[in-house]
Image (tube, rainbow, N blue to C red; front, side):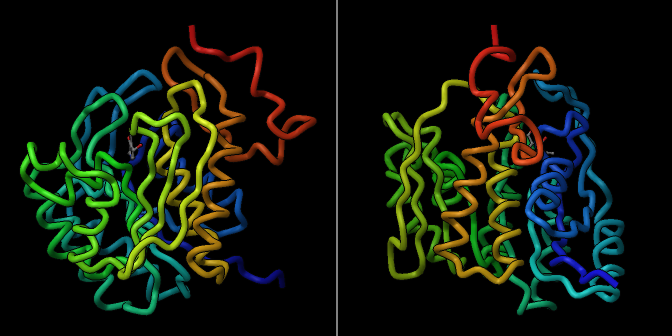
Length: 282
Ligand code: PXL
């Protein structure tokens, strides 16, 4: 019998364009040799241009989906994306408390790239209080980091990514990886922090397009490397590298944003071969 790949339990919303959400996580985890266990927390109606609507799955259903699998299989990592409700967040926090040895990767998704909100202030407060204490690594972009760091909008605006990370660490996550795509800097600067400060900083070429599902790709890739037993700093580096290549090879299947190609290594003749030419947004 073939050896079972590392198993990653995923809590996320379904984006049927497969740009972001559960399908993005499944693709990324599969691309990196893991077996995904996709637990759906919410259903969205969206295409590459934006989200029309979303509906949250009942918390009992989220809990039952996950707990049945946790009894059946050895889970090497838990990856959390869109939760949709405080009730769903509570379910995940309780599971995290019951399985303290499984690393938990939390991507705090509060809105779609187009700005449609997934999260209320109440959900953000519950995340700070209930889920961050059980989080191994949190992967906010700098805007999400500011929202988690403070509930005062004026104060948020004044925070540097370093200051936001410093505050978030007080809520209990072991590591925070803040991404710099939304900052006005020539390169994209991503920084990993632990409880005592900066662990590593990586700078990347700022790519020209807008991508749907880059955050999901990064967090799932990080989950995959951790599930494979890699230590955090190395896993953070490898996850960024994978995401960079997926973005470099992104395609534009519809009329909206580009979608990262998590299967870039399985297609095409040369690495990053689709970087130029067809598929450019108008
Ligand atoms: O990219 C964040 C994200 C995560 N999960 C779901 C989404 C989105 C963005 O659209 O739809 C389900």
